Amino acid sequence: MELREHGVVIKRCRDCLRVALLYPAVYSAAVASLAYQNIYYMLNSLGYVYAERIVAKSMAGREPPPRSIETNRPLKDFDLVIVPISYELDYVTLLRLLISAGIDTSSSERRRKHQPLIVIGGPVPSSNPVVAREISDLVLIGEAEPLIPRLVEEAYTKGAWNAFDELACLPGFLPASSMSCGRRVKRVWVRDLDKAYHTTMQFRVPGGGEPWGEAYMVEVSRGCLHMCRFCMEAHFLMPLRHRSKERILELVEEGLRVNKVRRVAFYALSFFDHPNADELLEEVIESFKAEATIGSLRADQLDEERLELVARAGQRHIAVAPETFSPRLCRVLGKCIALEKTKSISVEAWRRGLRVKLYLMIGLPGESDEDIEMYARILRNLSKQAPPIREALRVSVNPLIPKPFTPLQFHGLISERDYMRRIRILRAASSKVLSIDALSYRYAYAQAIIARGDERVARILVEWAKLGGRLGQLKTAARISNVDIDKYAYSPSVELIYKWHSLIDNGIPFKTLLYSYEVAKATGLG
Image (cartoon, rainbow, N blue to C red; front, side, top):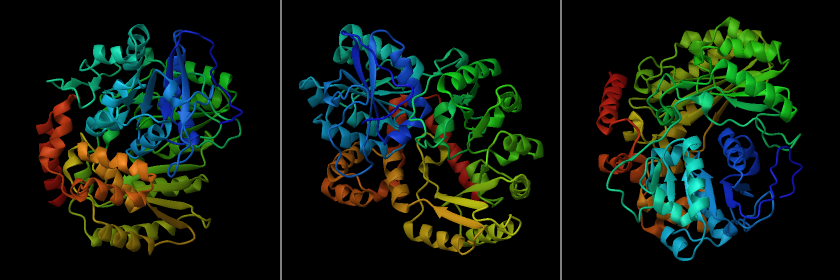
């Protein structure tokens, strides 16, 4: 891959541990991942490690043998391969890359043939490691900063596969399914974000049109105070931790300088939960003469002053996620944003020249077509208050996709027939001003299956990757594997879900989640 990159690391060290940092998606997605950026520079800050990046050429179809961006080194020639998994379908891309590289998808075969050690981490495998441990050799349970340095130190001093023997079953290190730990592996997490590694240099192709634009990405906080019942990230990243204002401003000042950019992209599940959020924006605007970008915001944390601040920071739109307009259904999600608040924030944003994006979720326990018809009426009326410009109001609709280690992990995915009918009800409200986009049902279905998958789903993923990994090939792979995948999407058993709870300890008892789901369901239906 020939790129005019800013921030690429080139090292000359004869005896370094060779690490492939494999991002199972295309380059533009890797650039936008702050976790991937941090791991890349954290590894290369160690004198005995040379980490090189490998990304996919495409998200489906035939993949050429993968080689590193830095030296064009083949994937199979590395000592260790580290793979962050942020989305369920990343597993398929990872398998496509392994197959193309001539690396076995079986841990025992990789060891027998002295192939690279495959280590998977991130929120998806840390929440349900059953699929990951069928594909990898080690699954990192928890956060990267305390786990990866220990991993590479052991691999450098003792060799990659000897490091596996040393680390397997210790806190944060769950081995492949061929090895039983006899106890749950504890999740490992960072206590003090100010002391955690955070890169100032970040790679990108200048003018390449990355998702955040020409911006320096900085993590403000980790975790979320609100713990919505559907949110895997909040449950995985608990407890809520903030970087100090002073540390964030140090990072921003240096990050803007070394990356030669004039925009900051703030990373947080809920930015305005940070006790100094307003001051941070003011400092970026006034002291650094820069702009800022914030992702999805909670409407109940916004007011006229904050909207003015966001507009002054150069943001051209706001995105808020009420999820539902129903006072009844919001209780099952554990997230209730008053309709009047969503309306008033939208109107105030339009007055400041901002476009508005709303996220809605359908397929909630107790939901009916009448609820969706109500949504359509609300959106139609709200769009009448919008300025007469194309897509002044955009609505993104997703089905509720139940995720592991959340109370709603027991809930079934909405059927395709019901989903498509309800999308049609919503789209009837569309106009020049109001656009309504919906997530592909096939994508949601695949995500739900993998999220709650087990060993049989892992076998399906291997067959799916061999076929090319296109969404339409999932059911073919399931037939080849002789597995009924509907049950993972629509009617998972308590026994199935208990599998990942029996492997890892993240501080949330299984009975607590089961009780919380029953309470949520009863509340939402009441």
